[in-house]
Length: 200
Image (cartoon, rainbow, N blue to C red; front, side, top):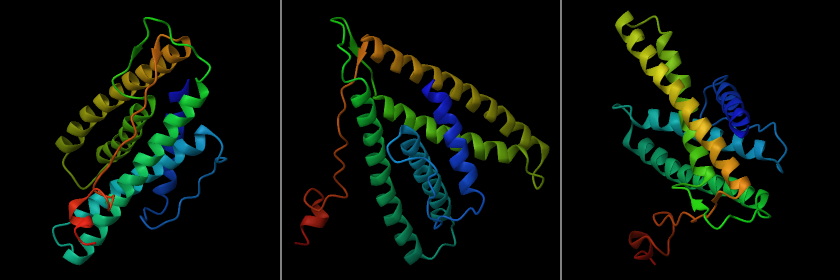
């Protein structure tokens, strides 16, 4: 199943990042560039670094100039994240290009890659919630509350994984078809963001 591979790689990426817990550490993707595994690792690495940038920028004592630098870095990361999601969808479009959808085939509410995007974020929530259950500097009530939340997150991962695998199986059988709408983000485009094109 694709999600077995994805969940394993997401956990690997998160563990690799937390060996140094450094948002400036360069990625060392262990997978060949021509495979889905490479894209999955890259996707989660971007999410993991951005997760920690979001933590840093919420420090109430952060220097405003530093916060602006991080905010712009987060914007760039969001664009990169979107680009990788589209690469993953391109992988699936190519994989299933010879499948002829049945007459009664329907489209899904989101593409496979955007569902995988949610699975990647879920892996981060699970990792960090589990860490909360192990903290010794908080009351047991905090740990217990986090254990309950962790149980929900684990169930959510199971359900989402099953749904993604079912979607891919339906596409492969022609019961569903893919139609990918490229994300037309406007805020990073100097020809579409009025604040940017007014500067010209």
